[in-house]
Image (cartoon, rainbow, N blue to C red; front, side):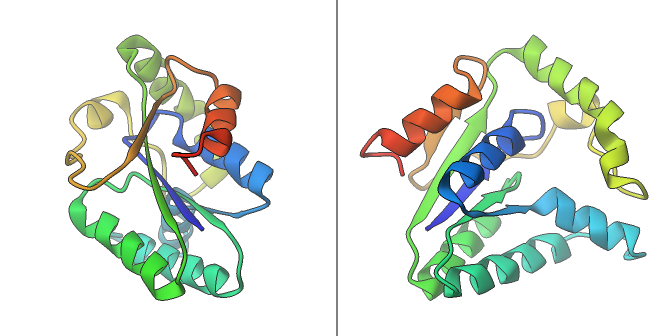
Amino acid sequence: MLLVLSGIPGTGKSTLARELSRRLGAVYLRVDTVEAALLNAGHAGITVEGYATAYAIAADNLALGLNVVADCVNPVAETREAWAEVAREAGARLVNVEVVCSDGAEHRRRVESRHADATAHAGHWSPPDWEAVAKWPYQPWQTPVLRVDTARDSVTELADRLLTEPKSI
């Protein structure tokens, strides 16, 4: 299974993705980590390289029969279709989950508090600030997607629901 968690920064994707990966014993693949490593290694102007690398790592792990949880913004139809192609080529089930935070104040607090954690990716990469997140270009989904709201439910509740409801995972 390829489980792709998508949404703008600060919604809680990474927290939920790590919890789902732990419970499933799945490979956890965070595009921010890939992009940070590329930037910190001296690659300037990262555009598609981070996602392309993540697709290849996901494909390798799916070919081994492992479940993969991908954590990424996944903002446009092209990236969403690319994840779908990875799943198709591997013969894996694709589950798309859009993570939102409907509480604007909480969302902003999360984004602004992440800057203190930027040292985890010391170097050239840092998470976006609130101004960038507030105007993030994120296309509405045109394909089926499970939508979860981290402002309404805890990560534990969301993971429980995603892993136990028949229509979810």
